[in-house]
Length: 397
Image 1: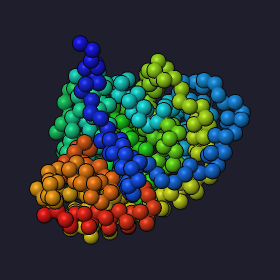
Image 2: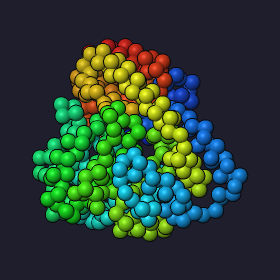
Image 3: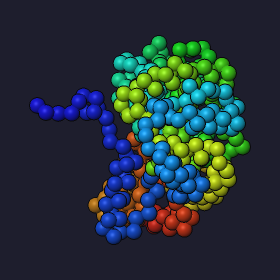
């Protein structure tokens, strides 16, 4: 029988991309859909970054680069880590990839094998458990809820560590919750991890620049775990460059070397034009980053207010990223006409059909009581979207 591999058969489709597809289909029919489903800035890539890409084309940066990226880009990333994060790396410890998504996969495929366990705090980005499955590992989920601001405790972490634990995955600021671990909270997790020196920490910091606290804190800043921490980052969120596909890791050299070998066999280098654009992003004026962050913080304040005006929604206040993640379980068991709401996915489909607003149910994020809404769109669209949702939800009885 002709069939896909066992590896592929075990994977689930991306819930975020599936909802984006549904909303695109409605838009193609001429329906005015407001999308709160996709996790990307609505801003254009800053002009000085685009100009660097155009110059790179004119200067014929159209040949293969080294697999981990041009040395100039890796030096720029090293300088960014030193200046912004107080972390010391060498260019040999930086591996650039086709987006942070590939960078994460590279790490997991390089260090995780069959039977290895990977601890993933929930709520999590939908792709994390699926990436672990691709690497033949076993996802170990640690659940949190809105009462704990969607953050796990040191006791929860220690309770799931076993001799098979290979990796802890962290995402702060978080997709999908917007929660941010403080320095004290990270230190408490580090105090657990120092007892288990063989656990690698994979720290996804792609939302670093969309952080509403005083300063981003990386778990890599703690000397006790620096030598086994892999930092994942990129230009997608902070510089409005999602489509450019340029992410990277800063890692212990043995992991960087492994990722270099792996990537060399299945994609080689990321786009050379995107690399030159990313170099300009890191070495150029950072005012664009500050301006986008300020806009997102204003929108965050707006949507938290609007969401708290919807009866039944429980809403915490995000400290980073550009999502809110309300507990919507109040509406489970309610219905309108022939539509029954039994879970957040039902609610998301109802809001798409009745309010023409696209959101994503929380089950695939490890939070079956919640629904994810991105506020990476204009203030006017956000006000309109929440007005539509409030009116549609009032119909559920």
